[in-house]
Image (cartoon, rainbow, N blue to C red; front, side, top):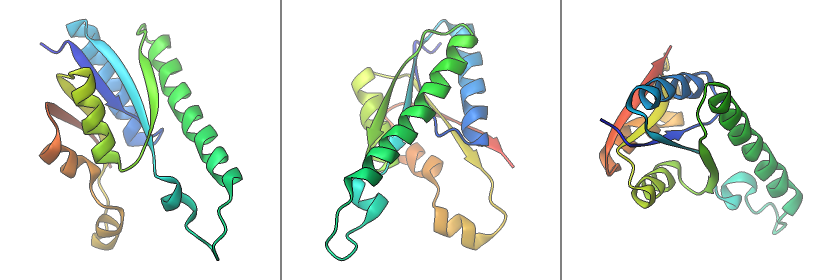
Length: 145
């Protein structure tokens, strides 16, 4: 069974479903659980508006992603897991797969929300699909509608 499970968490409904599914698997397999929240790179957040770079926006985003991670860790703790966690910065798929390799994960759990419109699917992209292609281990995709 799984010994090391990585949960990718963004606080969304599908992320919460992934957290619950990951909890169940970790409970039954007595696995070590790690939780990550991935913040986009700073330039992706604010861009270069007229050559200005506002560090306050970056600090606000760091605080927001740390709060997302802390909320997920608290939920896991309340379910009986002593998980560790980290906020990562970069492209979601790259950062999740890098972290999974680093911790030698047996399973990555990520949420996915079915989107009705083709435009929404195209615009938002499918992190879960790309993750399956690049992951160094099995991937469980928890689906919500």
